Length: 400
Image (tube, rainbow, N blue to C red; front, side):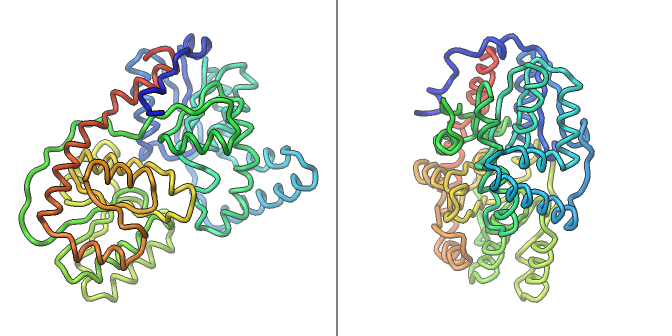
């Protein structure tokens, strides 16, 4: 089933009657293009959209190592208690032990919306509780396969992942509709969350005009990674692969650092390497400037570890941002990304998120090849437009 076949044929009457919709997210609003695009589309369609998120009903607070350990210990204890009692009460109590989750619930109830649009796994657990209190319908917008999104971290697998597996499915099954970002993820969530109907696909495509693909000369190829700089995203392999290449190239890492350890490790590698000048590190830009900033590069990179189920079905925002910026794409780890890259001839899948694979790709890729991939990216971008995606979103609320 293609996304075009997934327009909701019979919107829920309560969602169609809603006039005030509260979006709830526990992620930073300034950097979450998905939330901002959804809110803008729904406001354009005449809906009043309220936002419950960091800085809007939820206190913005940093989770330092001590806080993470405390929350992790609470989640871990809840897992053991639930395992003995075969219930979910302890897991739910542990979830709401985090202040941000309690604040989100209180704010949602206080604003008394006609419907709730919940983003991510933590948002849907809050929304399910608020919807029960208010007697309103809610939509679950699942951005990813939450139970494995940080599977590369042992502590997270032992504490947070079991909590997600306990709570996400029951909350999602109470949702009036479930939406997600890709067809493969839609199929996986139907199975893993035991949903009665398959989630509707609304892909993460930027709401911007395509940048013109202008021919470039010169031997040096400019690679770009933009987005959160975090473990599990191939940052180390990308840096090492660029540093080891014998051909002229440079790399820009643009985005916020999620872990201080990774930041320090990358800085240390560059400090001791003779080719360190090849790698530039830049702060994030506003999400509505991502595409225009990316257009200054030649190749956009998105490397994922294909051994993790979350990655194999991922369809990251940055893929479409790179295409709209007119960049060739270098990818790994995601079956959906590989299919798009290979079908449209706009780049290459290198198979593994490893430095040797990155270096080999650089050594065998010349300016002419990059030019062909960039031209194909420009053509592909015309086939991926936000207008079609938002029609599927609005149809859920009887506005499509």
